Image 1: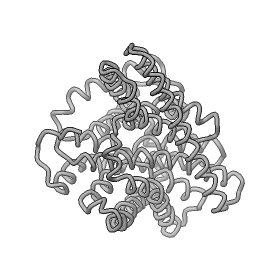
Image 2: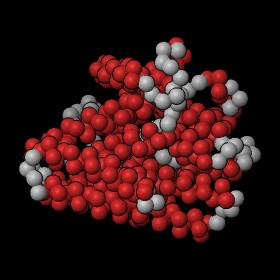
Image 3: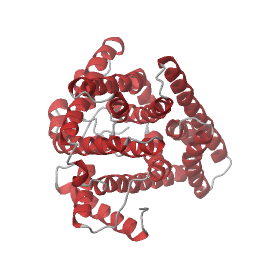
Length: 399
């Protein structure tokens, strides 16, 4: 069922209360949201609600991507750019291959289920890690690496799963065609986003009205997504590119100081609302009875997903460190254990399920593994990162 107005109001009230009190505990905000969502569903407080791929991808995801891309500075990205690019592309493929391969070898899972699962679960969500970074002192390059890699691997995952779903529907997996389709859709999305971002920057320069400039940022965020999707390109990567251009070039070239402050506040708020709704709905979507026959494969999938992420973070990360000097070993541990999964794999799995029959098991498997990894990694995230980075409770460094 679609979201009711009363449901949205209740979820936002709960998100506000949780955010106000979460500082008293050392538990990631996103983990608490998922647990509360599970509790709401168990108590039957909310009417039946389903995760909608259109709602998430078209409405809730763009604010999350745009806010993160808008706040990332090119000067920090330049230092770790090659590492981000390789980890978010080759790393996703490597992680997906290891994850799917283990499921096919150990449990004899069919490729039709294992391959999409491996791709989907490779996407990571840095919200909990970034929230931790804000409370302590970490190098700006590390934050840029974590956020940049997650932004791009979200786009890589969405593009790759669309290409893979098309191939599965056709019943033919042609590696050359897959690579060609992937490059075309990804490059198209980045190009559209870059153009929209520059056009938005130029338009912002023509006015000193901060309300107009703030409105233009909204147009750039959602307009880049819509334009790319209509052209058959990646809307996710378009939003990332548009946000990055507007947040770096447009911020310096065309925005007044009042507009910069207003835009920062607006997108921080929109990202908070979107993030809260996403993780609460993720928890609400968990129905224990639906997973009773999938416990073995969920456990195996969770373990395979961890090994897949480890292959990318430690294996590929070590090779990158030799060539580029980054990521160093402690940073690789942050990439590995901080690679929590969010709602993106779940809602994309719902979308894939809608494209061809016989994949209801995929959406349930992805949801089960996402919740397991959120709880296990989320509840141990802060002590692991503090120990790894040797951090104390200091104030965050400035960008």
